[in-house]
Image (cartoon, rainbow, N blue to C red; front, top):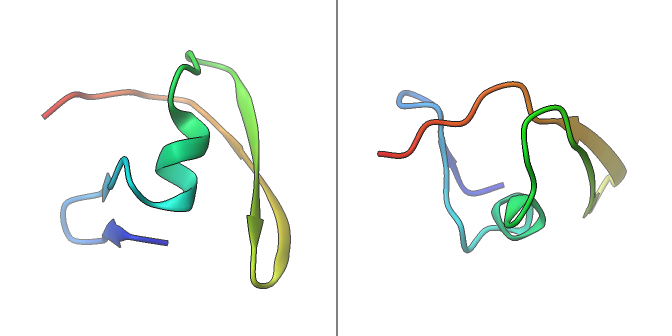
Length: 48
């Protein structure tokens, strides 16, 4: 996952970033990772 841990940011071009495009708060997305499917719930959105 392309995520800058110290700033808690996710790149829109990463697999999780692409899965989040068009989603809203409280939506759940499923991302296919090398370790299998992972579900994420959107609990906060900040544009920087």
